[in-house]
Image (cartoon, rainbow, N blue to C red; front, side):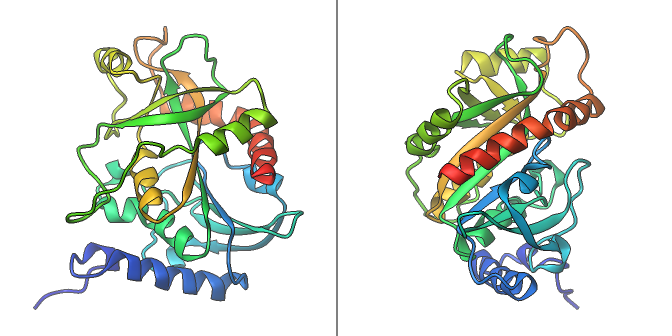
Length: 277
């Protein structure tokens, strides 16, 4: 006898956009907020951004919403938080990122983005903790993502779905961000599959291909956001220099520590940028 998948997104016969619509309805019921205007997915170092955005209206365990599951990575809250900003808009803060390396499939990786779009968001802010290839980027440096290179060998698009990614990371939103903080640098983000860190040779390959930042998230979510009609702004918090650039071995504990140390700075920056969008 066939068994029902634990998560509806694991059933290939189920439309992932229908699951996202159901999740958005459940989010409305749980938060009391009819629609959200902007959504933020927070990576390492972004945990305090919610407090910089405004008043928390509701905080919902993500696992209680259709298609979501508990976060499997330290440093992620595992919640969906609704924030009322001072101008009256509502922000959906996603602390329940599913990483591709967790092995749950691309549908689950991008479900939060599709849910945000179904919940009314028109702007998607994607953040991550990442390794820097430019050696002048010290840990704690926020960097705008100008483009990406997807080395996961996967896509959230299914079937003959052709989406133009020429201007995926909005130049308009990046201009607003640099108006808020003129010191912001930008670079090309390279998503590897993970969960192992990149080798020094792989970092040099990424550099030769035009990459400046290496990590294990964001690119697949950004593609799904474009498909859903969202305008995308990406931030990487440089938590360490990449392998072979850094003089010391890489450590996830050190990545978390660097992210924690930079939370206040990144949180305040995201608060100012989102308010200006």
